[in-house]
Amino acid sequence: MYQHHFGLREMPFSLTPDTQFFFDSAGHREVFNTLVLALRHSEGFIKIVGEVGTGKTLLCRKLLASLGPEFISAYIPNPYLTPEELKGFLAQEIGVVPEPGTPAYQLLNDIYRRLLELAEQKRRVVLVVDEAQAMPRETIEALRLLTNLETEKSKLLQVVLLGQPELDDILNRADLRQLKQRIVFSETLRSIDRKTLPDYLAFRMQSAGHRGASPFSAGACGLLYRASGGVPRLINIMAHKSLLAAYGQGQKRVGHGSMAKAVLDTPESRVTGRWLAHRQYWLWPLLAGVSALALAGVPHWLGVSL
Image (cartoon, rainbow, N blue to C red):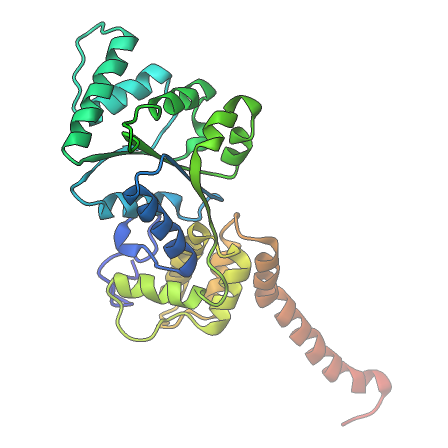
């Protein structure tokens, strides 16, 4: 596509959560540092909430990649599990191989003994649950009971919950108040602000191999922010489309017009951004045309010549 045109090794705005493209913004850095600090101090539950597209999965991948050998991590991308499936998954991740037909109480005991063994080896077990708002209520309760496994000094299992704001609504239920009380750290993942957006775009381009100044003009950045609200996923979608539009016109610079095309081609773009993009295509040309007609026609209507 446009990779050669812009001097890129790979696509800079892919939606795949690649840690190479983790942008160390102030908000994301604060949440990441909180996660690492909490895990190193063996806290129980940690909750990270963010709107759709704010980069929760990428943050999760970055965390897992940064944990040292003293950690054993178990990652659940799809938490729609039964309590039995949850225990079976955890058992597998920590090296417990139950016999077929093992009773639930025996499996729990095997998990406990294995966690104790790992603690004696100075190993820490972290269970990371992505899209936690989709976890059934019974499974959430089973997860809480698993975190009851502890020594006199520390938890044997730490849990990181990442989810959409609906996760807070779920945890506010009266029957889940015990779990909510165990959440030691709670953070919110914010969108990228207007001031940081050009740096984000430049970082993604450079990480993909681009050299030199960012191809995105100030006008394109302004329109992109209004159309995306700073949500990374929407930014990536429209930045990709704007590069395509610029490439199609043989341009090395992404201007307001190329970004307007990208915005109008993205149904999820914000209303304000779409209005500004529409203005690029029909309002300004229409006003210019009306003005030209008026200037050309007024003398004729008045019967005078200029």
